[in-house]
Image (cartoon, rainbow, N blue to C red; front, side, top):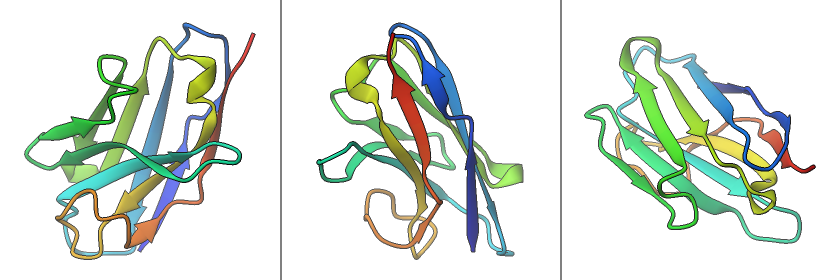
Length: 120
């Protein structure tokens, strides 16, 4: 199973970015995916979870600003990030749980990580 992320970069405070994560290498449908992030010197934290039924959960720090979505047909998940703050600066990782359906486990398959930098 391979996860490929795209869409990161440098943005000014208050700006927006959209991350994508495409899953390949499996014939099974992915029913849940997560987004994590890790800032320098900090532990990796769960940012958002989403299921194929469009159930989502978010960390308190991003509620109202970030929106996760999933394209079931493409096995792809997105993270729309609005009103970005400098404290959102981190490497963002997408994750597929080992059973393909239980979000928030913190194990399974990982993307390579993509840098998001919020700075003026």
